[in-house]
Length: 598
Image 1 (cartoon, rainbow, N blue to C red):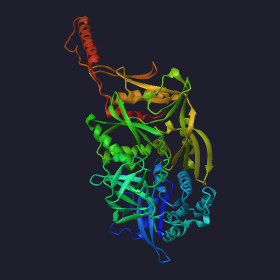
Image 2 (cartoon, rainbow, N blue to C red):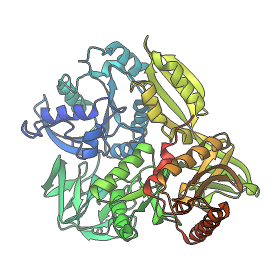
Image 3 (spheres, rainbow, N blue to C red):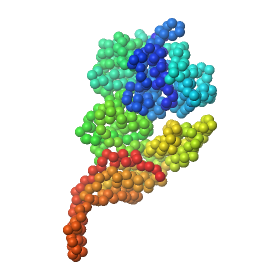
Image 4 (cartoon, rainbow, N blue to C red):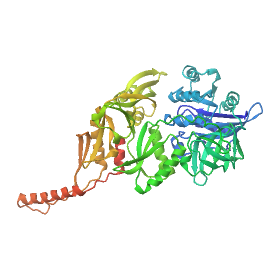
């Protein structure tokens, strides 16, 4: 066990974690030159296309240190985006040390700090690494100074490296061997293994990713999940060296996988403890922190027959992404589906893409909403994440919405327009700091709901892609909120309802009606589209009917003849309206997302 080192790589998004992991894989000869490609540990197509890490990946790397000893380094590469913080916390639960990367061109950023706190909470040995030192714009002195002032770490212990050219890789590996403590544990004690991830194989069932804290496990052992007492027989154990490599036995301190023919996906819970059924441990290991979703949306299958397939897909996806939370939901317009909770908008986008690509699901998504807190007249506190559950306005004593602290790093040239964008979104500036002659860091406190609709797109277009944006959740604050109902042909459509700030309701209602007018097809009768707050209509658009020119055959003659024909047509249209159905296309539900603020 003293020759095992479990370590993770943590950093802000785009600070070079995956590239550094590539060089470590090459240096330890874990992958041949023929098989080597960029982002080696990013296995999903979406990760490669977007250039981001979504899933933590592990690799067991053999390394011969300068002292001549053979070591096994268990590397866990983690995501950097704020939406995948939960993924990072789970990875850190299985490590004893962490490399914290600081980009030599950008310095310490918001998520670097957030991930450092996660590592300190997990009581890990921290090794600071200044990455990208080969770039012409690199400022090593600035990065070292920020490591001391902002991270509170000793800059003398920092290693200078370049994930692209391979500078400093040897020093990093030696530092891991010397500074990261070996795992503690007793191979003779009862088995204690923590599930930190899982995936599903159609032929083998659930593949459990786990870290062993005590005991050992091998094929043929009978195991038990502590949370639900379910028992299974182990078929295979092993470690990950990019792909699965079977081993006869896994021992305390190691990170690996277990295959035990688990076909029931819901039996496996991330954070659960595995033990032997004939020699169980006394208590479960502490699990992970609770997931707190902040963005909510409903997913519905396009065809009602696909509901069962969507349910299976959601189960398997939750197994692989424990931060996805969902429950059954129904809508009068869209039928049966699922109300899902996400850690952010990118997380929601990724889940949607994974459902479509990996599970071939065709789904309709409702506009994302956030959680609101209402204090009712009788003192009851109500949390509402679905506009359908909005309480009666007469019962509300106080309404509150979630605020975030947004950190924006941008070139000084774009400071004015970006400040205006944030102020227009009801933001309050709390800090403005020039990090260099040309770069500014802006800190605003904004309602989360305001950054959900095209904020990021507008920010990128104003700054021509040079501004970076990150946010952290603050608290609930009092706000004047109203429910905006949408009526199509005088029937309310629950899937299009929104909770908005009163000052935004008129412009949102008007724009929503305009967007729906463009997407809903004409019928043989007039279709009114209305936006309403309570019983008050605040905006209206009308889709005109297809009309046949019934007076075309009248050549001259008395006007009463024409009038008679038009009256007859009018009665027919009225009758048609009573029995007619308005079909709302999928694009209409996405129209809510494309509303531009004026």
